Length: 264
Image (cartoon, rainbow, N blue to C red):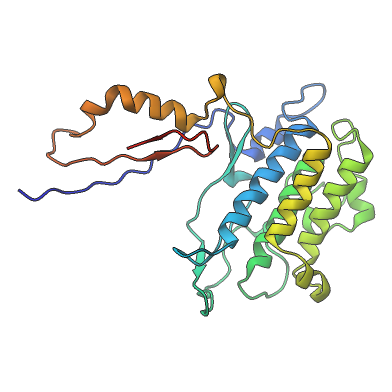
């Protein structure tokens, strides 16, 4: 009898929904995401972008091409993950990234015509950082009628949530990173000096200076994957057959926080 291998991608449940809605809930005295959490989220997404943009022996550079706060989800410790790779493109060494009409979400795309490149992800991430700094959506404020990605520095600083970002040098440093991301698509000098690694290390340096954890683990030093792995070990005898089909199931869950717990 021929054995059929069935692969499943299992994602943890993200109790705190997406970043867009989480930021909308921060109003008045109710603060769901303080500045330290917002800084942690921005760093974690920068790590994800850097991982995608860095090719290895198994794959080329991957561009997400639809980075936005709705595609960033939060677990119950407000760790962030980047989701929805439906528009992503891959480039192997020595080849061009497959071109296609720019899709994604309008307010996270730079105005004008731009070739498909990592700069499009940087621009979108810059808009997301500005959302984290202001609590606003990508459309900005009704008063200015200018999207966040197109606000100049003077007008942008007027809408930063100072009640949340209480340390001047922190929000100014983060704002500078966002501006470099956004301007990289139109400024040849900036585009030649920016990279996913530089964005990641710039945010990391602020985290270190402020003694902020890069990742918040769950109880017992576990992440969601570790918890799933634990349940898998208990139920592994029941996982070889699913729904009555005689299909052998080979299950692998990899811990994202490098706890070193892998189930097979």
